[in-house]
Length: 144
Length: 139
Image 1 (cartoon, rainbow over the protein chains, first blue to last red):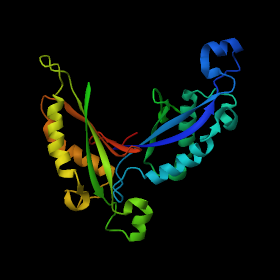
Image 2: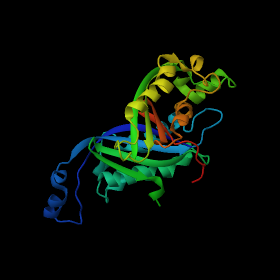
Image 3: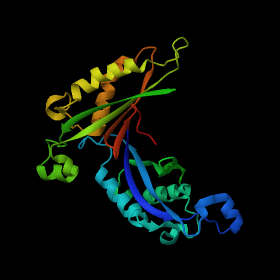
Image 4: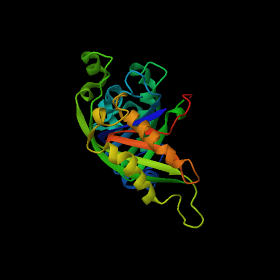
């Protein structure tokens, strides 16, 4: 069994603001991440898949297929976008990196079979680094 | 507790299955079907408890020497397919390199010192493989 991890990057802006909190509470909870015009990050996304070796190719995961999946369902929607305004799921959910990790993991899991129709490989984990110091891991098994 | 030592080597390889046509190989491996090279980075982790006297699981200097002898010396500045066994028989994908490194290191860590936990092989900074030895392919 092997775990194969591929790294991707996208740049996006966001603002952390919960409609369920008052203006003052939002400022208190989110600090400068609540500044009214938003701000941006160079997000780094590590996608890990696991599986046994394919006897024909000597690989567990075809990175070209993973690239295609991530480009189509993640990068195309998120890169050089405003997450609050351009991504449907963040009309309600606050685009924290936790929610972003859940959303990316959900999109990959939902569309996994379109490029990996067999039993293996399986999606294991999505890691998001919002900055080099803030890192968030979401395991595919945690997605309902 | 895990302890990890990192080593690097540079090598060339080609991903090509001789049982398949050129066209099939091109479809499966893309650009990797052309001979090319990488600066590989290998991280080897051992699992164990610190020795009560030395405070170390294993002297990392010793691990470094084993890695140099078993991995860097045979792999560095070589064309893996032509010069490094078993890659005359199996395709030198990052997966197969990780399991070959595991096989080379395993005999050194059978005793009381740290148990071999994992081998991570970076083919590029954007693509790496982790191998934990044989484990069943269950969910």
